Length: 371
Picture 1 (cartoon, rainbow, N blue to C red):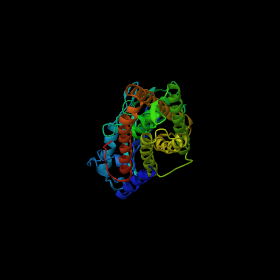
Picture 2 (tube, rainbow, N blue to C red):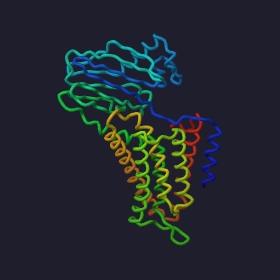
Picture 3 (tube, helix red, strand yellow):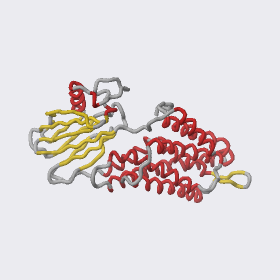
Picture 4 (cartoon, helix red, strand yellow):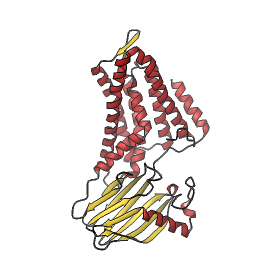
């Protein structure tokens, strides 16, 4: 099995280099100043094709844009980020847009009819192009600590009554953790592969259903190993203590699916599951950190980090709650021998194939799956 995984890496590497997929992210700051709100947003140049009037797959070099294109970009962005107070909409004025490294920096001042008492910000930028887009937002108001949150497609409004403390944004980071697991099918596939063979156990020369207690203990050991490992590297990477090349991490995550799925099929009773699952969990934690790190606010990152990790664990628990009983019921309905012969092989092979294709995609600039 080691030879098969190694061969997949070699074959994929021969195809060429690649960049692992990363959802688009913007960073914005809104500062309330009496009846005005100063708003600044940074957008990656790669996300500006439509705003710049280019084909969707065009590469936008922000350093080469002319004044007319910058004006077009500023209008495009400001029309999709609206600011209002209790007195009504606050129209944008003094729009500016310029290059900031490889990003575009767009700024304007929203002028309200009276000093802002309740700030409402609606964000509609890029969700039509990328439903997984995230907007990291910091809102600053006099007399309050900054409010940091994440805006997503179906939670794209931020409201703050400035007579009150900043609204809690903990759920935004919990949700980001949930969304990353649910939207990142590789993590879902790994957890499923981890649980496939738990429903059966060897009995002499054959197989029998694993009793509920031992099945739960086995699942607990494996999931705990995965949880502990990815929590450690998530925290370490998010705090900047450890960093590995993104491509290596994403390929290792895909390889972990291949290995775990084939192990469930070929060696469902093999020992050492804790150690190998822990090792794979370290890589998955680095993958989680790649998504979280760009969203972390400056300054106090402890609460957002813990909330994101909680979201990851909740999503992971939901997968276990669905997969483990389903596998147990299938083994009971079909019998352990039939489950071992007719259910486990095709499911494991499908997951291993999926992992192998992800490996190729992440080592080559090709799209084989389309998701």
